[in-house]
Amino acid sequence: MSFMLCRRKSGFNRLPPRPIGWPILSNMLDLGTMLHQTLAGLRHKYGDVVWLRLGAIKTMVILSSKAAGELFKNHDLSFADRSIGETMRVHEYNEGSLALVPYGPYCKGRAH
Image 1 (cartoon, rainbow, N blue to C red):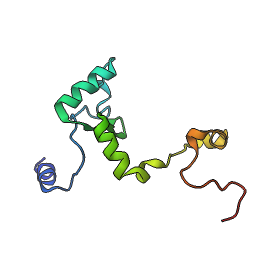
Image 2 (cartoon, rainbow, N blue to C red):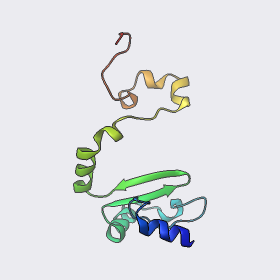
Image 3 (cartoon, one colour):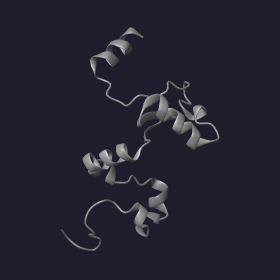
């Protein structure tokens, strides 16, 4: 416990603020049935950027247009690429969807 407090104070953990959450389920039970109201409450308590854990998935939630503008202005390439799961590849859904196209120039069938 004291190691975690020292680590947090020393600046190693540079994540946005977050609600603590439950073991294993993390923040999934905290979200409730009215997600938009829950997120508005989190914004008032933690600010425009909140870090949530949804089970094993770590999620950064942007809760204002100003924070979203800064994110996409300064870190656009970090968030431009999409991860495509094996299920999508097996059924070749990634081949015909603009939503799943990797970021970059179109090069199918062309040599670089």
